[in-house]
Amino acid sequence: MQSADPLLLENQLCFPLYACAKAVIRRYRKPLEPLGLTYTQYIVMMILWEYGGMTEGELSKIIHLDSGTLAPLLKRLEKQGMINRIRPENNERKLFLSLTEDGIKLKDKALSVPEAMQGCIPLSENELLLLKRLLDRAMLNMEIAFP
Image (cartoon, rainbow, N blue to C red; front, side, top):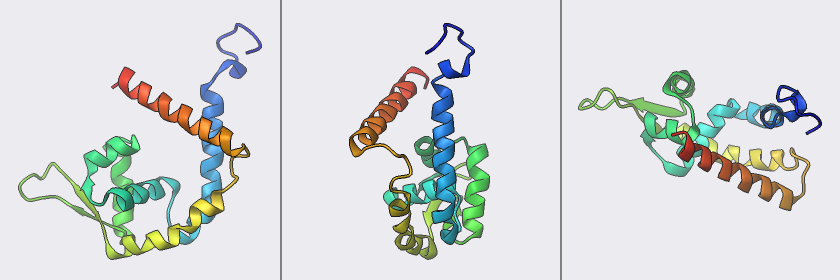
């Protein structure tokens, strides 16, 4: 930090986090294009590939998005034939999500994405592991401090 001025951009931790995240997400566009997914849709699909079916509320907690942001994204995935959105008759307030056969098959095509993203953050492997650990710990501490 160069100055005591709290409003200088160079004194902000939030800005490099924001700018770096934005740059990484922009790099995802090219490898995700053949899958027909945006970055956020890709994250949703990865969660469903890992956990299987779940409610929209459960997904919302994992992905850190509110239902107002998540709902249109899920509708688009359903329209693309990747997921099913089902409201159980006994509880119309819940929305259950599951993968379609096409959504399951998309996982094989998505295996190329992590490889394509290798090196998008030019840090050593140890630096990347440290960065991941620090960000995970920051998120956990924020969830505890600001539930």
